[in-house]
Length: 313
Ligand SMILES: NC(=O)c1ccc[n+]([C@@H]2O[C@H](COP(=O)([O-])OP(=O)(O)OC[C@H]3O[C@@H](n4cnc5c(N)ncnc54)[C@H](OP(=O)(O)O)[C@@H]3O)[C@@H](O)[C@H]2O)c1
Image (cartoon, rainbow, N blue to C red; front, side, top):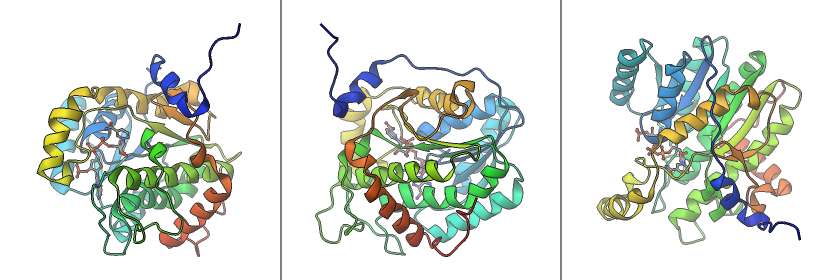
């Protein structure tokens, strides 16, 4: 009799139980761009990258936190991280900061889109985007797109989208990206942003075929971090006493991101979704390529990239 096989929808249970893979490859001379480095997953990733000799550029919204982190990295590893300030709920700031990175670094080896937020209420940015959709998906999409040519020139290079098992909550409605027609639910809004990001990973992977740039998405583990702490006292109490005790040390996320950024095993591997370092089948709705093409086009329009030639690579 054959072994019992879980249905595809439950593949995350199998992938979540597998042992993690590690990389001990050094990253001297490699330039990495990392978003959301000031806490949780991103903070651990910054430490693993700089600790292994990488040159790190961080995109963060808070100047004081950026300076503190840069100082801390200098003290620990004798290397500073250069910081670029942008609030990801303002795409103009994201564009400016990305252009500053382009001006500074003639070569970029790894881009890690990690910054993310979980909202329990519907809030809109000044440009009218739902906040989680803007921070988690549109900002990362804009950065990736603006850096695309530089990454191709720097090939072999890698793009890592810090996504989430939360994509399984879905919530993506192409006719209601701002939740004007539906009652907002935090996990659904989060799921919509992560689903949209995954869908654009498959499109970008096709675009990058043969160009020496890989793009993968990963769930960074269920780990202790500051996510959700923007949602008020009640949520924070719930998170502190109910959720956080069940979560793991974010060091596993930093190690996993480092594996994706540096491991020779990941050379040339692209267009996949990982639970930390183990490949996993994403939810069915996130691999709807027809809808994905529409999301890709809408994302270009919402980030005002539709009239630029950045995809001619
Ligand atoms: N923790 C988990 O269990 C888990 C599970 C699945 C996926 N993830 C994903 O992992 C990534 C990192 O999350 P985390 O858990 O490490 O959360 P976190 O501790 O809250 O870190 C989030 C990072 O994103 C930054 N950020 C948030 N809003 C921003 C904005 N408007 N503009 C610029 N930067 C902004 C934060 O900056 P500040 O320090 O200034 O707030 C921080 O550096 C996210 O994409 C999240 O969806 C986490």
